[in-house]
Amino acid sequence: MSPLLPPVPLVGDDVLVPCVDGEQREYLSADSAASTAALPAVLEAVESFVPWYSSVHRGAGYKSQRATRAFEAAREAVLRFAGRQGTDDVAIFCRNATEAVNHLAYCLRLSPDDVVVTTVVEHHANLLPWARAASCRYVECSPEGTFTAAAVEEALGAPPRPRLLAVTAASNVTGWVPPLDELVSAAHARGVPVLVDAAQLAPHRPLPKEADFVAWSGHKMYAPFGTGVLIGPRQAFTEGDPFLVGGGAVDLVTLDEVIWTGVPEREEAGSPNVVGAVALAAAIEQFEAMGWPALRAHDRELARALRAGIAAVPGVRLLGPALDVETLPVATFSVDGMPHGLVAARLAAEHAIGVRHGCFCAHPYLARLLGLGPAEMEHHRAAARAGDRAAMPGAVRASFGVNASLASVERFCRALAQVTSGEPPPVRYVQDPATGDFCPSPSAAPWVATNRPHPASCSPG
Image (tube, rainbow, N blue to C red):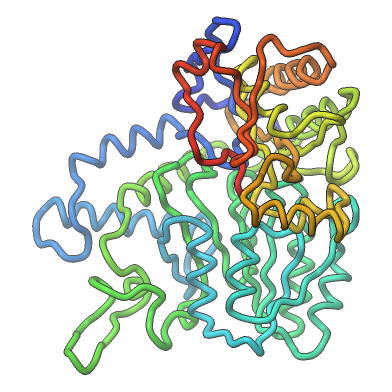
């Protein structure tokens, strides 16, 4: 039995926020599946580096040389984190995992006749780029939101042979972890390369070493400074033109010809996010110090308590696999007779708890988890086209990371039970039909006075 990881404080964990009763409460982020605050060591690394910041790869000055060393050291760190040191794989820095998947979709030179096997469980970032570039063959899920290796093997074996298997390493909605090793082996046995979207998995478990391509993002692993990573075989990026073109990607340009430079620099046109790379490397160092056995034991304890606690609240329906299935500390649920936006608004305004609500950038998956049929989906499509989000389908998601403890989960479950108890709220909530979001009425100072509603929706897909 691995020793449990004590909660690791994050920057901002001690921030107090106003509630509608006039009290200030310590903010509890139950939204780590969306984005995480910075580890203190990450912020310290950024603050230490910023005085030395300068242009990388193209400056003769001392600061430029030092910044270049830091940037390339970060590249080595991400290769090590992915288990790719000593291989011919390359690490390409991107803005985030979404850009990384789009980057790969371009570099694979797909055509509409090519087939990409993917699943209905995916985040939009691992659906839309493939649907735009090729023909998708989708693996369906069960009502519990899971699929089997056999279902993936069937899709891989159908003609014509796929160009790629693109699959999530962990669901951002339910926290379910597919049998990755089996999926990668099945694809490779048929000569099909694999992309794994590891954005949700990266802060919880080791990255899959056997996958051909892996994409993930720093903002989910306590380095929220705008960096993502795409890792893959060098030869996949050596043909044709790069995804982005511009300065730093070339050896020579004339008005008639471009000679592209080598990988990975040819795939990183423009001035890179050096600060983000330094931050991600610092986060990786912290993960290596904590160790995967302790991290996984911590996650397992939180996930069991979170999902069991939510399932025990009357009138609340936990979505996803059964309680005896191991997941990440991510749980999504619906509440009988209460809009998902109102549940999230009340948790925030009355209890200082931040959650995510909506469809979590995984509309096909959530529609299946909610059991929505074709007629219901057509109704919602018509409303979306008309700009009315007041009754859009959705759910509420709670998720926790290294800074959480069982006390964090208990606080969340107590608040959820209070919000869903049927007792009238302490203030009136109003809904904006254009966004679908709820907010305390203007009379509910100090919440509205310090946090005026923004015209952008909190839960777009």
